[in-house]
Length: 298
Image (cartoon, rainbow, N blue to C red; front, side, top):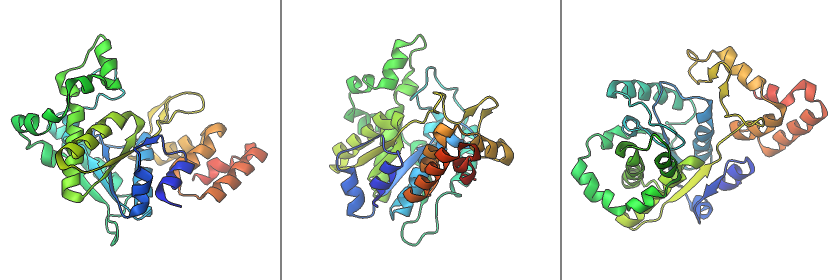
């Protein structure tokens, strides 16, 4: 099965650009996902996009994990009702190092055919001059289009409003895509569905500046069967760092998954094939008390 088909049957495709499936079957593609260093550890909510990068590599494509050491100094307004508290450079650098080690557990950086890359966008964003940025990037975007973004509209309509700092975030992410296109031939950006507007901005910049076509593929934002946000519990966030969430707590989080979510999570967070998951679903329906799907998730 091709990568797009693999992601689709697992329920991991929310939307994509026209032609993205053809591009993924035509040859090796370099694709990236960005990770926001707002904390020293990733959490289970990040696992979905980590799995997308892992599937990308398993299908023979080249994954890039971008840790936002530069954009993390600004903060992404997507999905936020108020402005994030700005972190210091030292805080961001510490968080970047923590995330770097965690991503190395999921991606193969020593592959001889499609090695993963880990880069920090601080390498190019923190040396970017304001005038150069406005001339070379800003001139390709209209304020009208930026105001039309859902994340911006919600904030403008709120009492808090939106600062110029966060308003310009999508241009920084668009510039990331352009830099990765130039340096590594990256033509695909993936992320959660809330990143669609930022991804489109990057594709537009590549088209305008380089006359080339790039693609986007976004994953659904997960909620539980009860309608709550995935990864949040009464005790708080479930972190990937065992010093923040103990292995026992991590195990209990998955074991206590609602029966209505268990099979869906196996599709999202495991590499089990369709036949094996279908068998577990059948067994779970026949013997729900034995929690076959939850136990397999161990």
